[in-house]
Length: 517
Image 1 (cartoon, rainbow, N blue to C red):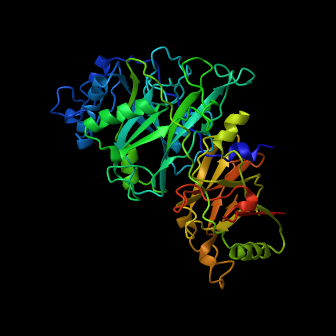
Image 2 (spheres, helix red, strand yellow):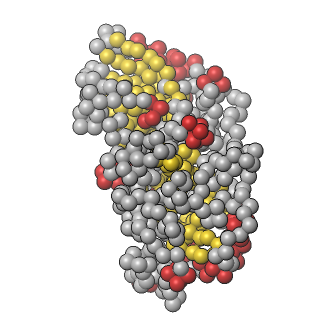
Image 3 (cartoon, one colour):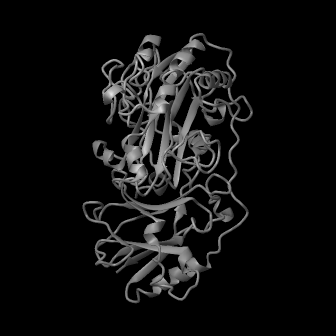
């Protein structure tokens, strides 16, 4: 039986590796930097790319945005500050792109993902010679990292969305005992997070740091060294980007005691492979004409990989403090119990089993790195609550019932996904707005029925509301599937609601009602 802890962690789509070697040189950067139709080195005049990096057009804007004009001087300032600079790309990966890959890492269909693509560093071995996935053939979404390197992202954040964030990961770690397939037979795909995410409640933007961080300019520096970060910030400020809109996403080189290595840096085969994943959770992502759809179709983001021309005295960042989970307030589960009992009583002939949607323990990147086990792109901003099931023919069904964490301020965004385990591809994403009134049929006289929800998955819904059909093409009867509830971002703590350990959980876990003959 497939293991729930493996399947139900956050989506991990960053093996979309996209690249080959690109030269790090001042000249190539000057020929690739964004600009406008008035600039000599511009690439967006009249909507046609006028310059290339190698054989590839990079960051070609159809418009001449104010941001691209300001970004145009950033590489020059970085070079003047003593850095070598190479330009990358910012790309979006969506559910439809899963068709190009052998599996899709338990993706969330209504949560597109963004990646920083970078050129290879001088002497860096190719992390993905198979070159899986779409995108520029000169760039990669995975990279090794020297202690004095940094990646700089400058862009516009998504429009109003329930959730978005930037998260750093160790994508894979060297392990000579690994039993993977070549060319990755000596690595474990940990995909483990390296600390808290930069989400919409904590991100510094052109509006400062507040809850209105949507459609704003922002800068994110990925670095391990405090001195390098400081020098890059100064160059960015000289380029016209105030320090108040700059963020640092730390790859934490040391544990809290300052002695134990947390990550393995360098270009050797034994070094870690890193990845930066951007989540944009928005149920309107697939709807034409919506603001989020327009943003996804043409996201404005610029990526630079930088390294000092002369190696500096290293000043590693200390291990960043984690945001603490929990407010001390625990949910009341009485209405959910009432709903579950009513659902059971509605099936007088059929048998029903009830179990609790169990959280995955693979939600802690530190644990996954210590034990060398997959974490599947965990995110500290959500628990993963779910079940592994097989679904037989009608009248068999699986009903999931839970509390609306959005209404009691436990989460900014909740969704339920259904994933086929064989290739880890998700095909349903149900959000809370889809389930308004779903408890009314079962507990019509309960004054708190609006605080709970229920959703059914069946082979044949026969027009029943709040029911989603799982076809044989999606998940055959002899295959396993997972149903996972994600609850992103508690407003008060700016991180995940407290769900682990179970005895201290401040949220009530969902219930799973299995209906069968």
